[in-house]
Length: 220
Image (cartoon, rainbow, N blue to C red; front, side, top):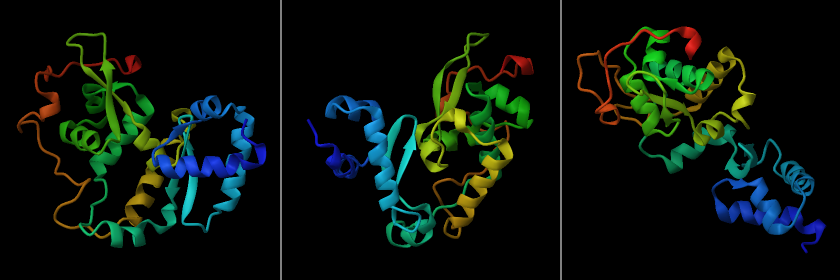
């Protein structure tokens, strides 16, 4: 049985070695601890890694993870990211916020809200693991359904999808992350050009029914 006074040290080592998020339930089960004991250790570590620390403990979707302090993102990128990235474009920001608040949602439902073709915005968000395919809607054509990912939760500091701020607050968070990003260059991870409907269908939508169908807004 793990000595209770060493739980925070062991948890710190686990999170450091893992790198990825660890489920709180798995930690409790493997270490034979109560959730309250693990969370007490988390509080001790959060006190240790305060707001000025370069490392923070984040909690999302029932998981814990060590992460760098976002306050130092710009200076870290100078060393770790010599090829500078561009921020999310406005179309991608709008599409991401729609997926976050209306998920699971289809491409056509997103386009009905935005009023423009969203194939390339969806493609960019998928490539950057901010959204994912979560199933198919039980309607004509069985269109793909999209939802947000754990990467989305981590990136925007949201513990659970049910803890989403209001839509304007989320857009403000996205804007703040943009402003902390390096200056844009000709190529980047998030940037893309919005194409019109006459462009070739993206690879992830090959085989999908691309005929527009009016969707009742209340069915989203």
